[in-house]
Length: 89
Image 1: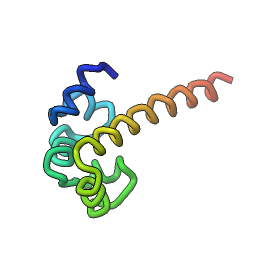
Image 2: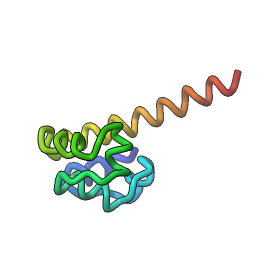
Image 3: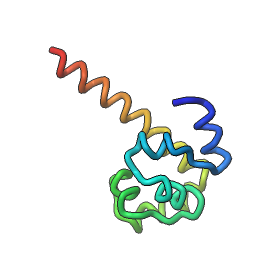
Image 4: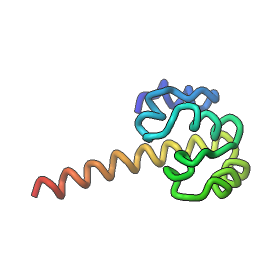
């Protein structure tokens, strides 16, 4: 993930590439990061209900959510590399 994307997230701007990598709509990710509103697709990606995702957003704040987003992105990369190793046996 480019450092420019991380900096954009920290400033409250959601790059389209981040939403695409997570597999969620850009507007949905912006709603979560900027307004604390979690749509169904974003909540599903987080592995929780919409109300739990909204409570998480309120509790963690924007910087905490950026950390969660980065964690999801890194977990996706790690999971993909593990899948490739298993498939390559």
